[in-house]
Amino acid sequence: MIQLKVKEIAAKRGVSQARLSRLADVDIKVLRKIYRTPTTANITLATLNRLAFALHVDARDLVDYQREDALPGLHEDDIDEEDISEADG
Image (cartoon, rainbow, N blue to C red):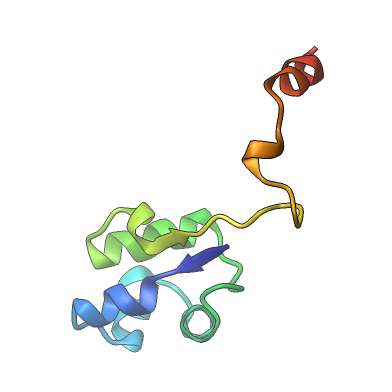
């Protein structure tokens, strides 16, 4: 799962939502959605980069990635290296 950490980092830096909107040139409605639903907000890389620039952080710092199994019950230990090499051709 991917979660945006814009709200947390902005709060640590003392930057309000309105100020961040102006600094990053991001519509306040978009920023509100990011703050409200950080795991489902759909933003472009350009927006992510503008927010990072405005907050003086790397864009990677605004994203938290927690791995989830793509298929329930399937784990890395279940994958055989031969299966992977056969699939590659």
